[in-house]
Length: 206
Image (cartoon, rainbow, N blue to C red; front, side, top):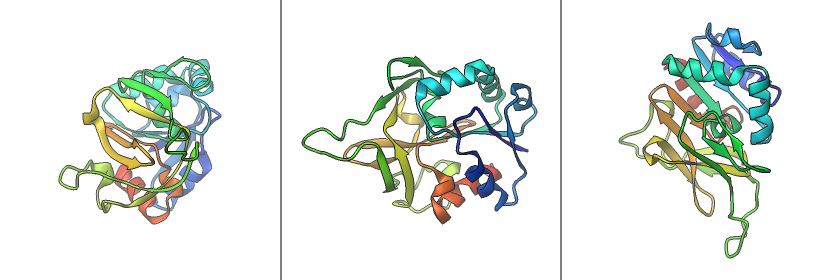
C-alpha cells in the first residue's frame, strides 16, 4: 500500500489520481500511526516551508516520517515534500526541516541582473542526468525529458552525490534526489504528463 501524507498542504488528489491510473494501491492518510503500516510513502507539498514543518510537527508526522525512512522503506517527496528533507529552510525566516538530507532550502536568485528570470519558476524544464548512472526513479527516461516545475525555492544538498538530476533555469537546480530508499523530485510528476507518469510508475515498481 502506498500512502500519501495529508498535512493540509499537499496536491493530494492529483497524486492519488495519477497512481490510480497506474493501478497502484493508494490511500491518503493523516494519522501518524498509519505511516508505519504503509509499504511506501509519498510526501507531496504546495506552500511555505515553515508552515509545512509546523503542520507536520503539530500532527506528529515529522517523527513518523523520519522513523519510516529509517526503516528502509521507499519514500518519495514531491516539490515542497523534497525541500522539507533539508536541515533548514529560509522562506520567510529560518525554519528547521526534517534533517533527512543534509543541506538547506534557499530562494532562487535568478530574478536578479543579469539573468532576470521570473521567480517563482513555473513551467516545463529539461532534466539533466548521467544516463550511465541514473537512479531507478528515472529509469526509462530520456536525458532532456521535460518536467513541470512550480517553485521559488530550491534544495542545496551538502553531498552533491545525492543529486540524481538537475535542471537549468539560469543556474543548475536540484531536480531530483536519490539515496538508498529516499527519493524526491522538485518537479511535479503528477503534472508532467507521460514523462511524469513514468517516474511514478518507477516508484511503484521499486
